[in-house]
Image (tube, rainbow, N blue to C red):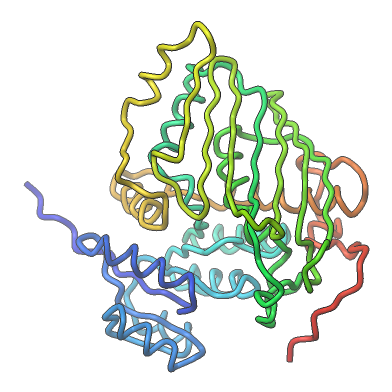
Length: 371
């Protein structure tokens, strides 16, 4: 038998809150990956992170990390406005970049990444870990097989709560740093999962408001969506909801499939209801259930390694991530222009292709300028 390949060599750029989830996932995958280096502009934070996760090499400059380390994968866990320059730097070093959501702040930036990807032959992948829970994988398989019939109706709700104090962090609630409010930074995980099940969307009509929070961005958005399949969906993204929940519901011809969780789901968070006369589908749904697994970073990172080792395209590729980001851009464009927006409509120099606010936000800014 051939000897097993050595563990993949992995680095993390940015050692703030979300980086801990990445490092913990890599620790669980220690037989397949080694976290060999981290970089952060804050040396003390990087040192504390490295000590906690036993990382041998610490840098305060990501370029120095890339020059000195032999790497297979770099996780980018920095504030959103840094994602594109860092991912480009990683790809130009000949390494795959795994970028926290959102991949970029605009469709224009996504296209810039596509250019670098084409020039270098390296890949940029996006963290949408909820795609990789076993039940979501099973749902996509059943939906694509036709076993559930046509998709007809869906609801997608990210109903979270963030108090005013949450936005005291200077970069939060800003178009130029986060790219948007809950549509970009919170609900994007749920509607990405919805899109992965229902496929291409064709049209959006939306509303967005700043109802209560001290932000430049919206704190709630609501969209009605038509898909190429003919299915219709509603999408709600909120930071104003004291009873927090994340909900998805898919009504197919032959069954309803529901998910309710908060920040990560297990098998118990799903419910399957067959239509009358299709009770046998319940057994099909239950086949392959893995009750002990929670959706999270580990499953997506593991899927990347599996794809590499079987010669497949690792997800979530740039094209897939762009479709999700276009959904966010179209939500804003529809809300602020007061019109329906079609898929593919936001092209070239359209203001909403250049930035998520499109220069059309109808309320005054309240965040102080960053220095």
